[in-house]
Length: 271
Image (cartoon, rainbow, N blue to C red; front, side):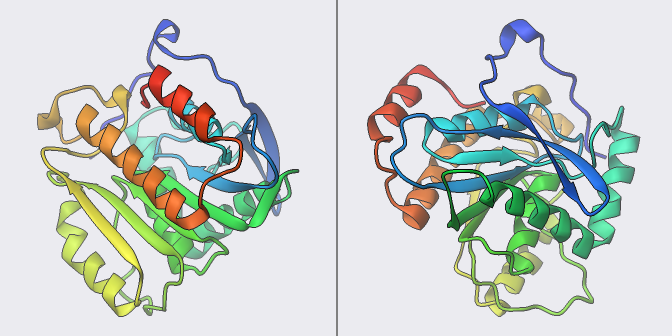
């Protein structure tokens, strides 16, 4: 069972610069977090961020802010619903299980986030991507498997499994998987996943980070890899850079953002 992580003291967290965004999936009310770039010229790509199984937290909000500094309009999506926050791993497992067991519903929630992000002023609807962490990494892969209108997806230490009885369809979105080489929760699924990608004729990149376990991008996970989930600075920094390179390949340089992104990189370490 994956551990839950306590929130870090506020004094250790950077101030957030985005805003809450209410939206809906049918009758379900959802509360995401939207962060917009400053200084970008013209239309910008949009990136949906899907949370880990504890729900939308400051980890995803900070990620949205960091993406905005790079010139992307970023929405940290809400999969569970407004006001729904699991209190412990048992509740998180139950909530995540709803979507793991119903991949169509999971894809529907992701599509709702994509739709509201595409509707934001200044977002190029033809330049969309989805990224996710842990449970959200599974969601990013589901966006590709479901043929959602995205150019690419990035899974950070995400679940790789897919229902065994589901037909494998051609995947047109480019796929980047950032995987902890020593992840005890997901590594068993690597061979099956890679076989799936081959059969789906996917343009995919799979990177395994030495010594990294589950949740390697999350400082809230602590630094004890023997627990199966832990932050690893090297893997976190490298995977963030690999995502940036992947987005540059997908979208090209964003006009007006090169110097701002360089200044941000010099002043800030992604967490």
